[in-house]
Amino acid sequence: MVVVLKPKTPNDEIEKIKRKLEDKSMTVSIIPGKDYDLLNISGETSNAKTEEITSNACVEKVIETQQGYKLASRLLHSDNTLIKVGNKVIGGDELTIIAGPCSVESKEQIIGIAKEVKNCGAGFLRGGAFKPRTSPYSFQGMRFEGLELLKMAREETGLPIVSEIMSTSMVNRFAEDVDIIQVGARNMQNFELLKELGKIDKPVLLKRGLSSTIEELLMSAEYIMSGGNSSVILCERGIRTFETYTRNTLDLSAIPAIKRQSHLPIIVDPSHATGLWWMVEPLAKAAIAVGADGIMVEVHNNPKLAKCDGQQSIKPEGFKTLMDSIAKVAGATRKMI
Ligand code: PEP
Ligand code: MN
Image (cartoon, rainbow, N blue to C red; front, side, top):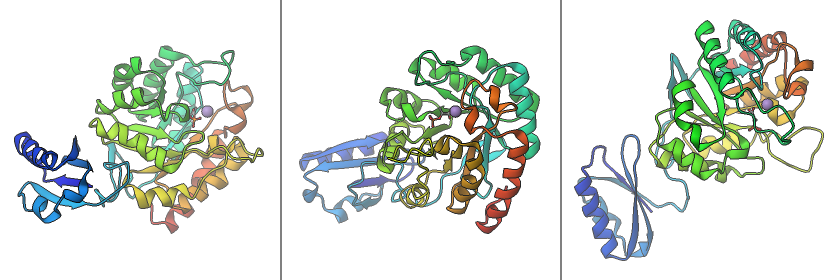
C-alpha cells in the first residue's frame, strides 16, 4: 500500500501520519519524490482504514499496490515523465537520437563523428571513455582523456554528451563533465552505484541488464529515484536468449510493457541488441514503431578499424539513411524527429 502525500507536506505532518500507522503495527518508510513524497506501507496493512488515512488534509490518495517499484510506476504518476537536457526534451513528442562511436579513440575521431551525426540530425553524442570489456586485454577506453575529448566535441558541435560510468568513485566527475550519465547493462544491478546516482541532479540513462527482467530494470530505476533523482531514461538493448545469430535478442515487447507500467522515457539501442551493423536500421524503425522515445546507435567513421564494436557500427552515410527511414515511421507514431 502507498500513501501519496500532497506536495510540500511539512516533515512534522509526515512523521505524525507515519507514527499513527506504526501504532497499528504497520511498517512505514518515507520515499522522497520530486514533487511529492510517498509513504510505503507494509506489515499489517489490513489494519489500515483508507477513509481514515485520506481524511488527513495532507494525504492526496491511497493506492493498493504490490509492485516493488513505486516512484517509477505509472500508478503513482500517470503523465509521461519529460526530461530536459539543454534545449532537448526526452520522453515528449520529439524522438531522442543519441549517436556516436562505441569508444572515444582520438580527438579527430570523436569531433569528426560528432559533426557528421549532428549534420544528420542527432540530438546527442555518445562515446565510451571507460569501457566495460569482457576481456581485460581488450581496449579499456581512453578514460579521463576520453571524457576531455568528449567535452571538446560538445564544445565544437553543441551536442550534449552521453558516456558510461563504471564506478561510484567517479560520480562527481561524471556529474560535472557529461550531460547524461549512462549505466551500462553490466552495472544495472550495481546497487551502490545506483544509490550514489540517486543523490545527484543529472539524468541517468539506465540500460537493461544482460539477463534482467523488465521488473528488475524498473526496480533499478527505483533505486536511483528513491535517492531523489527522478531523471531516469530507460534503455532496452537486447537480452540473452538461446539465439546466437544476433549478439542479443531485442525485446521489442519491453517497450509497450514499460510504457504501460512506468512513466519513464524508454529508448532502444539496436546496435548492442543485434551486434550486426546491417540490422541496426530495420530494428531502429521497429523500435520507433512500437513506441520507443528514441534510439541510441553506434556510428563510426571507419568501423573496420574501430577499437570496439566495429561489426555493429554503421558509417555516417548509413546513419543518414537510417534517419531518413525512421522519420517516415515517426510520422506514423506522431513523433517528430
Ligand atoms: C555501450 O553502450 O557502449 C555498452 C557497453 O552497452 P551495454 O551496456 O548495453 O552492453
Ligand atoms: Mn559498444
